Length: 241
Ligand code: ADP
Ligand code: MG
Ligand code: MG
Image 1 (tube, protein in one colour):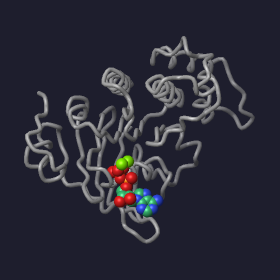
Image 2 (cartoon, helix red, strand yellow; image 1 turned 90 degrees about the vertical axis):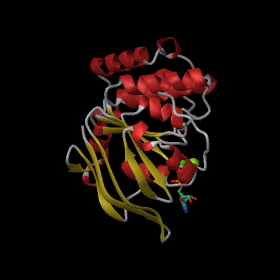
Image 3 (cartoon, helix red, strand yellow; image 1 turned 120 degrees about the horizontal axis):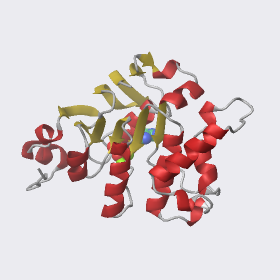
Image 4 (tube, rainbow, N blue to C red; image 1 turned 180 degrees about the horizontal axis):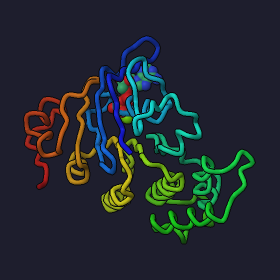
């Protein structure tokens, strides 16, 4: 499912944090959002997963205005992992993944055999079947992130929005999480802080600085030495081929 962001601006308490954003993710594309700390990545993504309403502009999913959808309909199309993902859930892994099924259940919340099958399938896909009965709080950071991805996948969304999903993970876990995300085949919009990983995993990158998109396109076209110096203050940075 396609994501189209047009002329999007976000204000908080009268301050404009994000201005005139245009961004497009085609169906099945993995689009990375990169930019210095405080440039507006989370603010933009919060608008896309509806934690914030835009001051102007629109976010459309498959052509429909996201902010006009009901929460349930929105949750069937889009799943999000916020930057401050709830890491303190005192539930088992199985219970947390089952929460992903809520948008598909009746108001009474009756769990069907199909729900159970979806949960088992996504736990297997993220390699967490053996963790199903563990308390979430007892997991390592990498395991938690895999479980939260399983929960997002259990929503069977068309679009996945991730805010720095590899934070606090070691490099092997970072690669594992990005491989899972890529392998999902969903349309993905992810803020990423590691430019090398963004370059190697994304189909397209958008660079945000001071709340505005300053460059976009294929990673190797975007991450020029000049841009790295101007936007990130990075010199002699080499992006792998
Ligand atoms: P990033 O995710 O790129 O690090 P953020 O979107 O978190 O950036 O923040 C962008 C800017 O907006 C920063 O200057 C931040 O301090 C400011 N900001 C974010 N949230 C709020 C808020 N709730 N109230 C006021 N300012 C905020
Ligand atoms: Mg930040
Ligand atoms: Mg952020």
